[in-house]
Length: 192
Image (cartoon, rainbow, N blue to C red):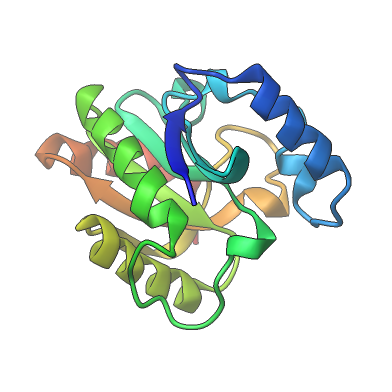
């Protein structure tokens, strides 16, 4: 099994991406609209795991001053794992967990290279399962994210917040400025 990890944000493979998009159109994945017509070059980092010339996993580091302000990034966004490589049950660690083993470390390195003050990861549902996922990140990436006690609007300023924007978030601050930046810039989006 030949495994490659390529950052499509900077080293985009149009042929392989088009092949993935064609595959995605044939699936019954409930979330496929999140991935159809997605352009990896619009992200700061977009690691793709390729096994035997097939895309099997990806996720991204997203920057958006319009949504979160400067110095904050969102990691593991747009995460997708091929159904044949998804694992149910306990998050025990190890390289079978493709996103935390291969994608997330590259995003964290890019966040540090860009001198971001903090990053966050988010999920719509099930904060208990999300907390277990954060444990997996600690095991596989040696990164500690702190789960916030309330949901946030992760989509930025808008009059009516869609349900899909109301998410549980976990934050990883890289420095003391990051703590203040998160508190000050994201306070308006905290959903009490």
